[in-house]
Image: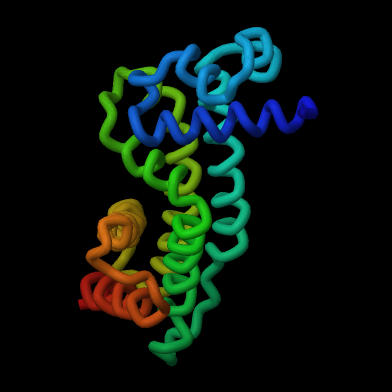
Amino acid sequence: MTDENNKDKILQCALELFADKGYDGVGINAILEDAELSKPTLYYYFGSKAGLFKSILSLYYGQLEDVLVEVCRYYPHPESYEDDVKPVLINIAKTYIDFARNNPVFYRMMMALHFVPQTSTAAKISDEYHKIQYELVEEVFQQIANVHTNLQGKTRLSALSFVSNINAQIAFWFRGYSSLDDDRVKQLVKQFMHGIFS
C-alpha cells in the first residue's frame, strides 16, 4: 500500500468514526484499529488526533467552499422575479444538496458539529470552517440588500435562516422524510423568498 493510500485510509476511517461517535467519542487507537495501521503512521501524516480532524475539515469544507465561491454571486434583475434573487438562492441550495449527496458521511458530521458544546475541542476546531461558508452566503444577502433595501440590517439573519432551511431539508432527506430533487429545491427557495419579501 502506498503512503497516499495509507493517508486516505486513515482519513476515511476517522471520518466514519467521528460521524458515528463524535470527535470526543473516538480515540486514536479506534481509528488505527479500523485503518489497520500503526500510531507512527498517523502521527507522521497528521501529528495528532486534532491534526487529523483539521485535515478532514479542510479537505471537505474546502470542496464546499470552492463551489460556494462560484455560486455566491448575485446578478440584479429587480424587474424580473424569476431572474433576480431566485437563481442565486437556487444555486446555493443546489450546492449544499449536491455536496450532501456526494459526501453524506461528512455532511452528517458537519451538521452534528453545530450542536457540540462551544468549549469542546471539536467546536473550537470546526467553528472557523463553519464561519467561512456562512460569510460567503451572508455576502450574497448583502449584495441583494444593496438592491432590495428591505433586507438591510437583516443579511446575517437571512443567510443563517436560509442555510438552516437547506440543512433541515437535508436532515429530513437523511431520515427518508423528504426528497432533494429540483422541484423540492424550488419549493424551498420560494417559501424562503415569501418570508423575506413579505
